[in-house]
Length: 381
Image (tube, rainbow, N blue to C red; front, side, top):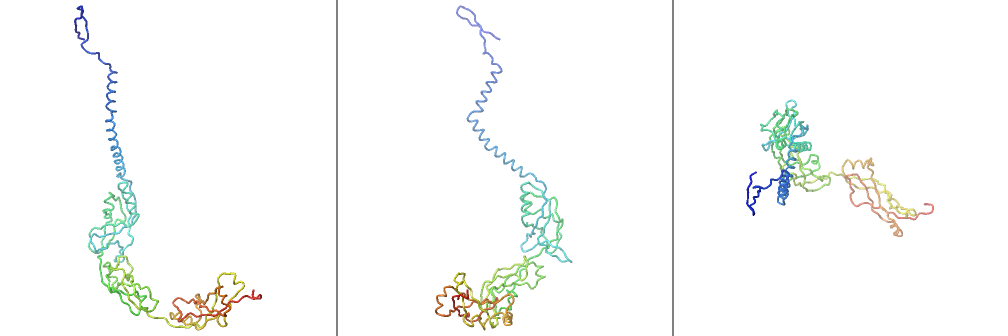
């Protein structure tokens, strides 16, 4: 080590080192550690690390969740119903079955497919398929019958937009009918069951438009619109807003409007008749009063005779011939215990309620009967 000398008092030479004593390895390590700790655990450093943690951890979780959802799930086999739609307005496309060279639509067409895709979206689409009909666009085809490979179903937006692919599909081929829709104008008619009951009928509007597939129109040239009138039993004039419906029942046959205003007159088809005799019964309210009292009819009032009625001819004839089986005619009058207060006045009068068969009614005022309330004698109790 180099040395230097200096003179001191007394000219005595003294020697000292030209550099400081070197620190040991352990001292240097401890010093570095203290310096790192001061820098790392300073307030500013801790706040910076916390801010980084607050956005890095959520972002990491989101990336993990997204990756999990986008991971391809195992293939899933589904059977689902579908409805074909044409990109060109005014055309109906249906799956059909050929019988003797003629197409017959298959309602509720369905296929079975094995599909794959991202796990979450695969579950979503599979649920939609099971829940209901799926609309499947078809390639542009000319009107008529066409064989079509079923793999066009895989191009439907419900599959493409969700990254779903088809491994297989059965049946592999479908027969489809492209049918232009046709609109025809027809006159509104009363329902056939109502025609015999009507003397006159008018509708406003008088004509409506019917839309139907062209092939259906060829097979049903007499399709029309029926008005459903509600009151055909009461003779006389009526008017109402009547619903209208096609004369054939087909989901693809529709009307331009749902109702028309109807003005009509119902024929009086009833005939007059006479019921020769009807027994009369009294009805008593629940009361202990009737333990000691009873009802006594005036002579000849226990039956009403020559009852005039009107109604359908067939029922009136049966009433004339004798009682109706299973539908007895009943004649009753109501009695109250308070009527006893009028007993001193003699006989009381009460209207008779007559239960008649459906469609039959009385003519004139309801008949009446005479009665009085009597106290039971000892021998009567």
